[in-house]
Image 1 (cartoon, one colour):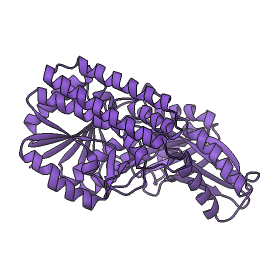
Image 2 (cartoon, helix red, strand yellow):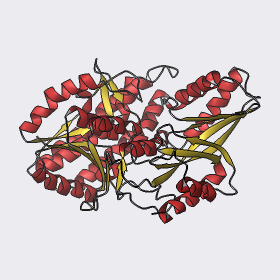
Image 3 (cartoon, rainbow, N blue to C red):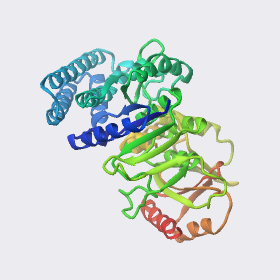
Length: 469
């Protein structure tokens, strides 16, 4: 049986207009595929609000988290009021929303009663995962109103993870068992499951989350465990672009990318995809398509295995913020790498995934990136925490800490120096390059520059890319 997994992001479910598009797409694809599985994110901005609510609860600020709960209730009920639902369906959905928020309020109160220095727990993840549970019920109700058998499914009943709260890792074997036993039988009864993205649970049932942007990862996990043929991600842009269109208006859509290229884009700052979602799809050769919900007939971007004889072009360029450490030092980097990882994890809950280092006989330079999924304050917070860690081991007078920009070009066979690479380097003429790193996969080449030079470097490299087509 041919299964299509479709993931709808926050912009796709946040307004009545967008939800109308969701409904139209599901109705159309329901006729073309044997079975559909939907994964939904929280409404835009809701997860940020829930994170703030959890933080306020942890600080015992009852007025603060109650205010956020009231605001979320108003927003979701206002959206429901705009949808073409019958009286009974509307009232049942409103009652569901009230129940979920009331239960969440209870979890906030429990969290508020804990000591402020207690580590983040399942209660924190239970709070920040409520957004997906709300949106799943809205989408499922809309489907049922239109003669489709939509059922909201909490991924806590499907996706089994470890207990690394805030950044949990799935257990694919146990998750597959649950999906095969509980989700696939629904498909045979012509039910369309609407699964909550972003969240899971430990084997003992404690709620977890998969990290910011984790709804993408949910779609990947479900596709692999359900043996789906394709995954479609619906967003409010035309596909994966040559660079961030918010930074560079001349950015263009890319028709095709390999799994390896997309994985590098995700790791080095492309905001559209969760970095961990690509690996499972690549391993099982499940195609991924990124499409614009407001232009459903457009092909978007197809991610799959590209033939080896393809023309090798530079496809895209990304920019991501990072932190550099420099010192008059030459020797092993094990200690400083461990300290960097500790500082990043204690600030963001994420371990260091990308690190660039360069050494000479007298000097050492180390740079690590700040994942875009963590939020806008992560750079300053991590920098402050790193300084604190250096002070604790009395190294703060040796290592100089500075924010930097990491510009990464992505394509195929970038480990072969040719005219493409020469043109990129020439575009950075008169720009101080702090470090240059060729990725071991041969699919990325990164330049570390001063923070203030990042925007200009991004624009120059992007101009080379689009003029070399």
